Length: 192
Image (cartoon, rainbow, N blue to C red; front, side, top):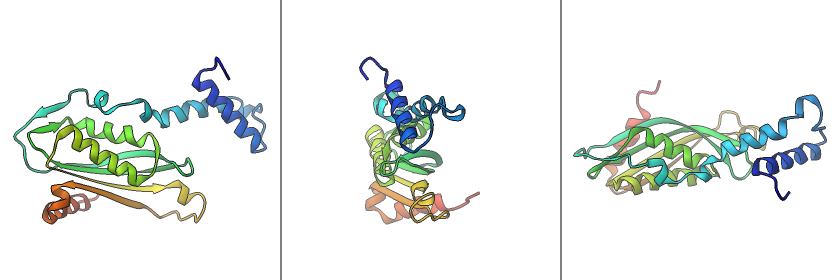
């Protein structure tokens, strides 16, 4: 495949998958599917081409705020590394600033960067928490992700109503039960 772009190489691989499944990649409905699938996979895994530094782009600001900052219900879409099927959910992030705050949109961008990689939810939760900690130098960071996994819903046990929650608590959220409980109460209350 020398001389082909990554998109062309991926398209050839998808064409081969279609053939192996017993389908005809030349029939009308599938003719452009390998190219579309390759483009979609590159989009769904674009987090590999991003870095935390580029993403944050200096959007860390001095602040006297030392109370909890909470961002709830950040939508996320990721790919299970075991079956290459999506998991879809939301992420809640809280941190206790220590002289610096992060621009609000950067939290969603951090979630997206790590979610747009093939992985498991538990690792995604830790990556988001550690990234927020690294960027802000916060006294504590808490992250909870709630997601539904198509690998469990569409195949295997086929449980349509199942969901998974994972959490990572760093600093004061790990060490102080009252702080942790305040966070958990805030993310569970007033759903709607």
